[in-house]
Length: 85
Image 1: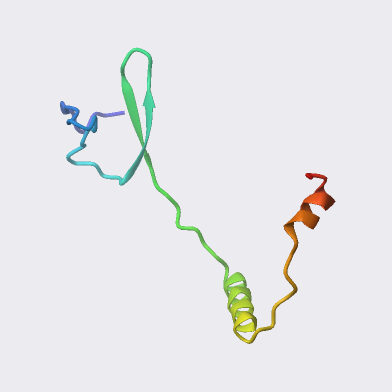
Image 2: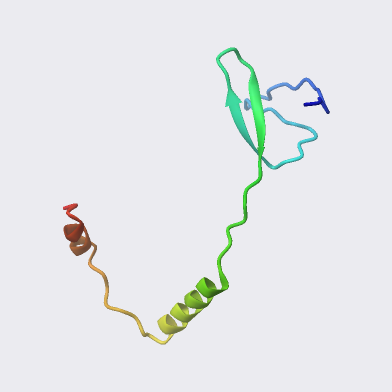
C-alpha cells in the first residue's frame, strides 16, 4: 500500500489525538504492546427498516391511540415459564 500522508501528532491535555485531515468520522483503534497504534476506518451502516415493518408499527400506534390494547403482561409469569425464577 502506498503512503498518502505522514504527520506527527501530539496528545492534548485530555489525552486525545486529533487527525487534521481525517476522511472518516469513526475509526477502530488497535494499540500494541510496543506502543504502535493502528487506525482502521469504520463506516457505520444506516439501519434499514422495511416498509412492511413500518406499516405494522403505524398500525400498532393507531390501535394504541384508539385504546385497542392487549392485557398487561406479567413479567414474573414470563420468567416462571422460562424457568428463571
